[in-house]
Amino acid sequence: MTAERQQCREELRLKAAERFARGEASSLIAKELRVSVRSVQRWRQAWDEGGPRVLRSQGPASLPRLSEQQFAQLEAELAKGSAAHGWEDQRWTLSRVKTVIGRRFHLTYTIQGMRKILGVPRDARLLLRGQALARCRGAGA
Image (tube, rainbow, N blue to C red; front, side, top):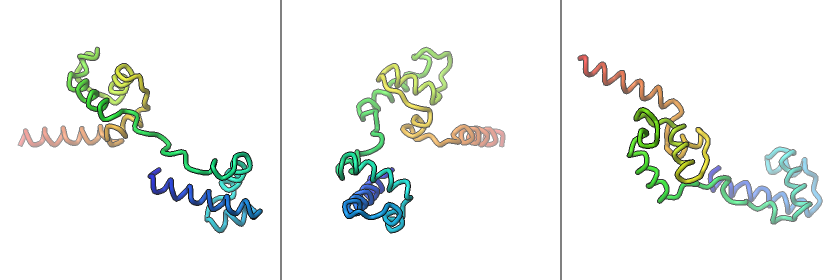
């Protein structure tokens, strides 16, 4: 969720809190704030237990876990090639990069998380195959 969207959601929760204090019904609050009744009920329960402060945003759901310095170190490790890290060939896969990050920085990522931090599209294999085919066709012409 973007910071802007997160702020918008917080504002909705705080508006709801003002209305909780006035004793308004969850269904009315949900309708006027254009959110689900279930969301308002969850917010009300949290508000009942901790007041409006618990409805404030807790910050980003997940921060980039590799610092700029660590990312630079990762790039240096990858430049050594996968064979330097114990694999028999020089192919880097998301799984292998994930393993290097775990070994080097003691952090864990999912494969989907690896795609995000490395900027790899979901269909990267198809993209690479298409580029390889184009090179072959170009060389044969």
